[in-house]
Image 1: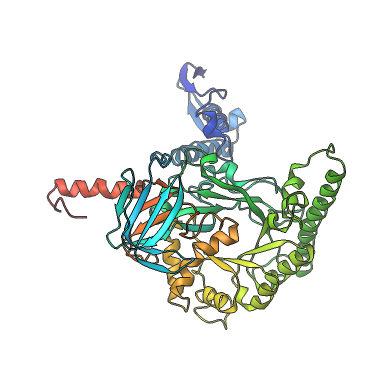
Image 2 (image 1 turned 45 degrees about the vertical axis):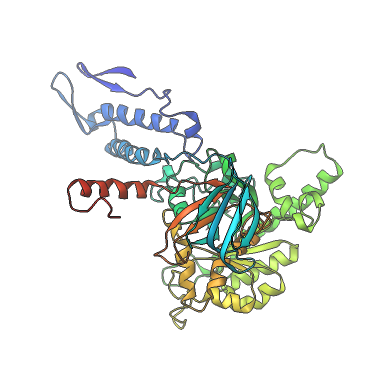
Amino acid sequence: MQRAQRGGGAVMDVFDASLSLVPRKREARFGRSFSGWARAVTSAWKSFGRGCPARFHGTGHVVRAKDRGVRMTGWIRNVAGIIALSVSGAIATAQDLLPSAGAQRMPVAIVNATVHTVSDGVLENAYIFFDNGRIVEVGVGDRMFIGTTRVIDAEGGDVYPGLILPHTQLGLQEVSAVRATRDDAEVGPVTPEVRAITAINPDTTLIPVARTNGILLSCVFPRAALRDTVEAPTGLIPGQASVIRMDGWTNEDLMVSGSAGLVVNWPRTRPVRAWWMETPEAEQIERMARARAVIEETFDAAEAYRAIRAGDASSPIDLALEAVVPCLPGGEGGAGEGTQRPVFIHANDQDDITSAVAWAAGRGLKAVIVGGRDAPEVAQMLVEHGVAVIVDGLHRFPKRADSAYDEAFTVPARLEAAGVRWCFAGGEEPAHERSLPFNAGRAVAFGLSQEAALRSITLSAAEVLGIDETYGSIEPGKSATIILTTGNVLEATTTVTRAFIDGREIDLRNKQTELIEKYREKYRQLGIIDGDDQ
């Protein structure tokens, strides 16, 4: 702090802009540097001294803003900045206080359980034995285990693979209305080198909330709004999606796959003809063509770059193009089709999906449609080209006046019936991603089978994300990433009682459960509820 004297002797404290308000590590987690906060507060305090509309000095003389040549709007802006920073600062510093689980220390056996393997049906009165984070044995009936094994009696409860959320901004966004807590978008039209894992906040309070409902893995997408501006389109390729575990001390602990695939926001193919659209139709068409050209140029440049690097390894490295190369046919450095990373293409309208699939097929890309509202309308094309779909939620109105009222709710069932590879994402804001299993269950009421609904948030999601060799089902050799529940995981009345990620038992508490216990204790002390009431 430094002391500053104003007018006839009134003394006030102001912040020194060089002071660091928070540790540098925290500073790197959010899109705006916290040291900038210090500068903003300094500016606001100084403006309060110089630019207040009418300020009393120590002599009692009133100095008007117009006499000092300072605009009132600047003062208001800076004071508003102090208020905004105070609010956002309190929210931004909120963090999960639960410690991460340690490595599995002894063999574990879960017995007397109903095991939903997903890959091989349901096993009654079954057991699961796992050690060193991997499932060793799955069987039916009684089984003796060595003395060092920790035996958990499921008491007839259900065991499922850990649920997988294939599309989210968990860890990149805390409160959508507060910019300081959002690190989900990069500036620029094409930023393929940006990886979501770099910016994910392991201490977010929202990961434990989703984890409590059985979501143990998720794929975090960078999200930049596609804007067809006059100057140039932005947000076309916002970066790379990352698959994470829902528990860990650091980003490295969380990471399953730092580069799960490249994200592309596909531009519209038809102009908007509506009363509210001010941009002329011809200009809309021009902007859409320009946006597609930027995407084409990026992939053309990546192919040329790969050829140059293959011929001369000493040629300069371009990080942006380097990130696109693994998505090209031949995969990493031409190693083969099996290593080719997917391209996650955001598209909802039928024309947009058709255009995106045709573009990807023409380039030999491994496309995954994200959104897919009209995907059932082009199901045959999706099957022919082997394109998977991440259905991004059910809760939306019918798009057209002549559409069925349940159009959005029947998308999963129609894709399943058509033989399209698909998985389900909740389509919620990060604070509500915990509802993933319930939203998948809601599709069951509109024609989807329970088995398909469960698969869509476990094994199918793992297949789309390329992690199915390790996660997504309960089989020997796979990761011991499982949950124990009191019933059908798709039902809202079901509670997850235990969870394991790679064999580590996870603490299922979160801020919300702690508040529940806090106020239950209050009413116990008041004698309103009994000690055993839950």
